[in-house]
Image (tube, rainbow, N blue to C red):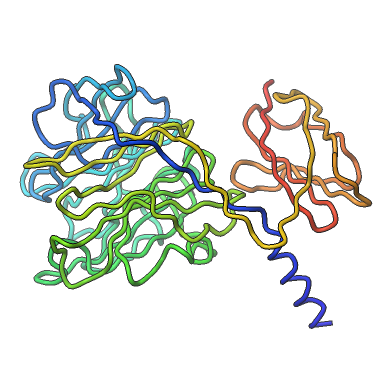
Length: 387
């Protein structure tokens, strides 16, 4: 019996759907009209109209700013982001982040030592952040020297990818001594707790040979972007910084082995990718002579890595968008069929066997997945409910 179970597990592993990695076109300079200083660690708002960023991340006088969109590669500088920035040096307020309901997050070292939680939250509206407070939860290590260095909030705000980093005086010159990435789930506006399976989901990313940070999770929760470089005692002119992506086929499964998208030495340092909601554009910052600027790339196509003995289910769904009923037309021969409706975050909402029409009238408007399983073959498709 144990042998049979092992065979089934191994066979199921071979049947995992192929992983699709994105690719991007050439680098394009971004113009921020009226800006006269460094622009680092960009974040593009979910509606695509506002570009948040901080100035030079020196830790002495780092503040958050914002600019409004003219077109994909042109923004107008507006001002400091009111409500987020400290006024008494030394200070560091940076790494902007926001979900689709305008819940705003950023990192701040204010009062560090007396208080060890460095992630803050508030509500954004028209250049202002109000209702400010610290983000609590067990994803904070609360150990002197450790802090939340970077973060990436999910589109709907229910989960948070965080990067814990340890810094030490007179050690690891130019960067963190070690880092650890994780995923936390929202409890309320001021609290997130680490998922029990966080380490499994990120097992291919948490590599002790690297320092990794600046996570960005795509709006569908299927692509995770971040920056990394090889761990060493110090950052040197030969250190290579890489922007990587890891992918998965469903919003709750383990991310793949990462793919390096772009790399540069510290002379042309690249860091901190951020993605538009439609995944069409990636922005990040780059070092230039005497400063840092924001650049962009358009998504081009995808590279598919096939698994051995891959099989799939061929099916169509209609109508899409749907209102109260959705039909599945199976184009693959089958004896038994399991159909599941999942939220974008993998929650099972509907399950049925051997019926191809699904009643969805109890579900609210939004985007969902249909999961079809036929004789150990599995396929997913996305659909939209409009009420």
